[in-house]
Length: 425
Image 1 (cartoon, rainbow, N blue to C red):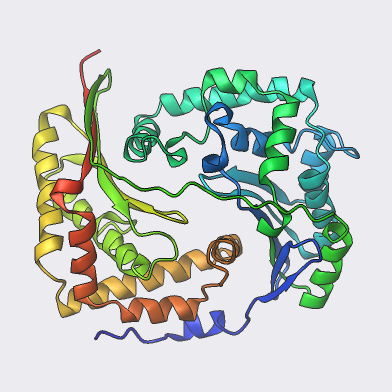
Image 2 (cartoon, rainbow, N blue to C red):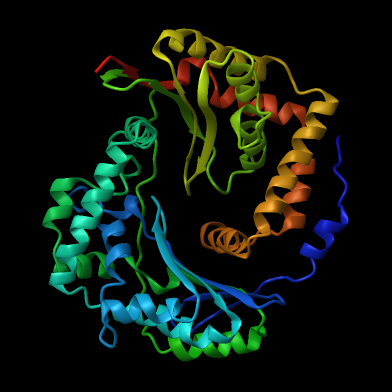
């Protein structure tokens, strides 16, 4: 087995651990004390697009946008300027399974930031006049995605793979549904889906865990417990599908893939490494070297692995000149065959491990990236993955593990494909 040594850069990253606690209302707290002037805070809730009913599609994302539009104490301007005025950054995002509010700020503004988070999370009023304005913003966002072949094809690929299941739904929703959302729709959706015991309030910064817990108790602890026995519909019954359509684009766009292991699966690390070798962020990935660099067929080619609570998705995307499309697709399948038939050699496996550990370490240099990873890990699996855990799991992966998972997810009979064939305008 190849063992990648623990270099000094990682040793410093392992010194401080997160402390965990739970407020009386069920909100879980996560904090790591880290020296420095910059602090990070996230509030992540286990509610996303898959928790919507069909007629609510886009509502989780609409909530994420409109919680900033006014509370019982603040108007929209005061919310947006609260951290801006002291040099901080406030943002939010929605996924298929989570909604998250995040902020980066100077450490002396912990109290200000926690006060703001609690106010918008629990006391937003969703005024109708503000909702009308935000609808226009989201409609523009939907149109911008439709103007991007990559975004459109990825959404359609998930819609096809998860057809008939809530995971198939577009995060943004549809123009028709978004136009019809009202204040009461938001309040009903939050009442049915936003449970205090499915929230994690997480922080990295230069205050003690005791002080963070005290401030969290002050601003979040008095919020009444709101507990929901929410059961998500599991995904099952995957069947491969192939679809093709014409688009008035200069390039043809293609996605190939299938379902993959879920977030807490013991196979997650082998498939992360498999994805990295195939077409991950490194320029030396197999797809990058053999299709872009060697043949010049595709300016953009990559693979992605998305892990959900009960399933996952691995996919390959490329944008290619229509004249080279069939050759490029053939080369992709050739690379998949190699991964299924030829185990990584000793040096290849060592390089794959070093590359993945280095990528994770570099991403963790961003305190926010590390914090979001820890908070999601706690939310999804009731545990936290530290850097030493990741290194241990990476070192445990064998060439057999990678070839086994490759044969599972890249079985030609189980691959789905969607194609936007570019045609002249």
